[in-house]
Picture 1 (tube, rainbow, N blue to C red):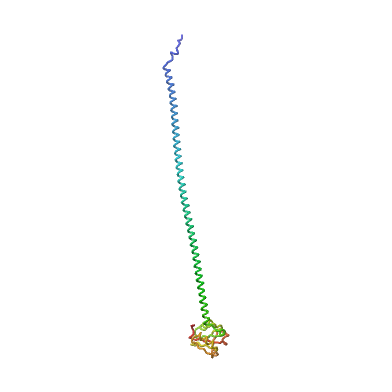
Picture 2: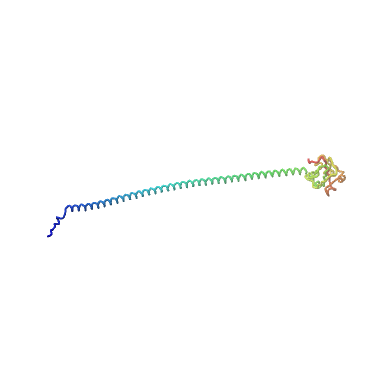
Length: 256
């Protein structure tokens, strides 16, 4: 007959306690692991937050630095622009002043030039007036000095060169024309004469011609003999019916 076992007798209290301890140990390990994991997560989260905070601070500092740099750059740019504007303004004022001074100088120079021109023109006008006045005075003086009566101006005169000097007759022709005589012919005499001789039947004419030819002799006769000694260049109408013949000698080769 089988022997019945008692369950209570089979239960070992030691085993029960051991089981309980193992279960508690397991629970404790699980709890510890859970706590440890939680602590690690907290530490990791805190580290992450610190890193994020540090990065934020770094970014903020970098941004602040960039902002300050930009502000400094803008300030420097504004200062440079302001300095440039001031320089341009000063340069513009200087150029304006220079242009104004230049225009003033040009205006003064123009006024001075106009004044000088007016002065020179006035001086030239006065000089010309004085010259004309002197010329007129001299002309009047010469005309007064050499004025001829109207009846002598139409006198026909033949001037003959007997001096041996070429051009003497033409020279005295000009002198006679300046003296008022209008009709004068010139020619050559057949032989040389030392002195000047005037042949005319007009006493008044002889006196006037003697005043023109110094050291000359006046004869009322001998005109026909003179005609035969005349050597005229070509045909001269006044040669045969002249009122006076002037034979210029060596002593009248120059005008006094």
